Image (cartoon, rainbow, N blue to C red; front, side):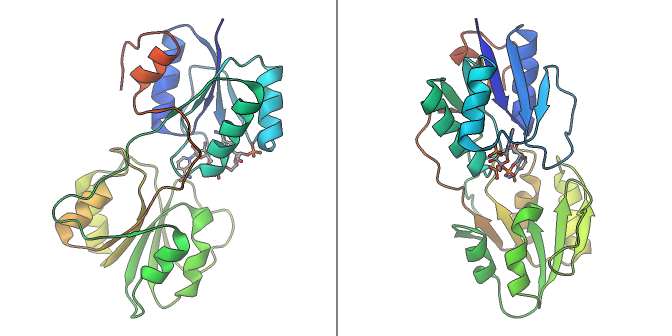
Amino acid sequence: MIRALILGGTADASLLAAEIARAGIDAVYSYGGRTRPPADQPLPTRIGGFGGVSGLADYIRREGITHVIDATHPFAAEMSRHAVEACADTNAPLIALERAPWTRVSGDNWIEVADVNAAVAALPEVPTNVFLAIGRQHIAPFAAKPQHAYTLRFVDPPEASLPFAADVIVSRGPFTLDGELEMLHTRGIAWIVARNSGGDGARAKIDAARMLGLPVIMISRPELPERQRVESVTDVMQWLGHSARLGA
Ligand code: NAP
């Protein structure tokens, strides 16, 4: 008997949850709880951290989890590392559902950097208008360049004060190309800082930047330990021994 644990919080995780529910597989969907859950899931859900590697390993044993699917965001590196270790400790099979990163196409003006601190360093010294398309927990280092006018976009309204003055847009994607073109144009954005999340939902800003000839400081994905990784819901369903009806 399968009892799957989906580490979720992404659009792909929701697609997978729908497929798993349709197939009648026993499963739990886990949210990190940093943002409001975006959608009801057709599976039992739990919210919040497990308490590190040992907490996740305890959960796997206690709940009789037979398969773990890491469908977290490609930048949710801590959760993904914990999943690798906890699955090794408990001998629970693990698969990662992770969309491919974006690749540079003709016309893109990307400056690729390894992390947020390198992104701050890559910004110019002369004051300019910057769109920071990164999560709120990563913005603090940009306080080192207070000369810029920053536009931030968050899924939920900020609860605490920000580390520097900024214009905040509250919106949950996916975003359209027309919408992104208008946002960048009306705010006079000259530089974009983004993470290489991949997928279609967040891609419009990258396409818009190319069309407007704007430079993008692109933060590469974090390094993760070796693990089995697939890019589609269909592949995860096959791994579970089922065929997906929808696929993705
Ligand atoms: P993270 O830095 O890798 O994780 C920090 C801690 O949060 C983990 O060690 C774990 O706590 C807990 N956690 C994270 N995801 C969890 C999950 N699905 N279920 C239970 N606990 C979880 O993660 P993050 O970048 O803050 O992302 C948190 C959640 O937001 C994830 O579900 C992710 O898929 C989603 N999300 C993230 C981004 C992003 O840009 N990073 C974007 C969209 C969605 P314990 O150590 O206590 O177990």
